[in-house]
Image (tube, rainbow, N blue to C red; front, side, top):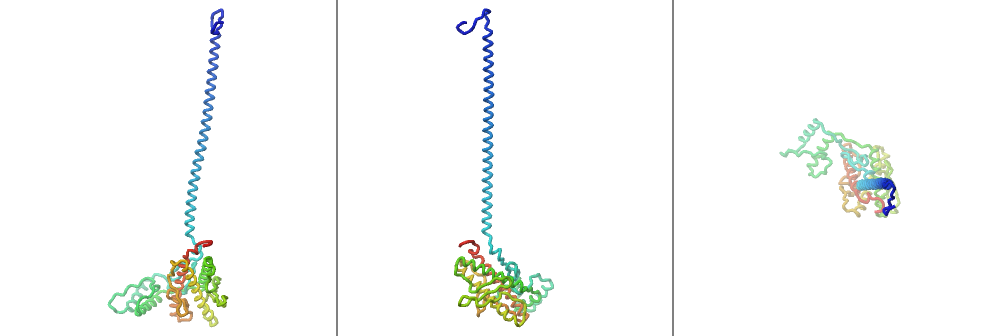
Length: 348
């Protein structure tokens, strides 16, 4: 064996050493391929794991974005509902005061006795009306001014002569158009709703001022509501009916009188509510003043009293005037319902 580690055979060949080296080289190359494949496998697995983590993070981010957008949408929806709820009013839902032509209504019930029918006049009626207006008009050399629609509801601001002319035209209009009468069943039910509204107002005002009470006691009982009169001892001495009917028998005359008194006392309770609300909100002004003249209450200048015992023509006029008065009264009640404290819950 020489210094290089090669064994010399007698034949002088080095075949075994070369074969060994080739096998060793092939073994190393095979090992390198295995390591490379293993490295590629590990790289692929690591890449796949990182891709899965990235996909999961992307999905989580997208889900978070969707949740954020959903939260924004729900927040805006709730905000819109909150703003809408701020416009809701249980008062206007429970006590819907409106008008139907000449009648004031509460919850769809007409509070009034009689009014002219709202209908379009025919051509023949127009000719008759024009002829009557021409014949009754004074000869002043001037063309008479045209009458406004529903002018019988407007306040009279002319002189006495014009008042007489208007009365003639009104009577002609009454004969040309029929009147609509409201049954007492509906009137009594409407007064029952008014009584309930006033009692509810009193309870709400007592949450602001514990000592507030109406000067009279209202007992809401639907179509048979009553109002009681307090005396010096603050005890109810007598009850008066807030309902009536068409009976004209002698024994019901006292009942008609009591109904008239009940209407007067009812207006006094409305006046009490108006005075109490005025202390907290001076911006609420009644559109129709309520005044007491000779122990009789008027609303907008029209008497609250309903005349049962007048003649036929006067009865129609009184019934229509009372209808107008009740419409004014309901309009004042609707104005009082705008008081802010009525639309709040809990302590104010």
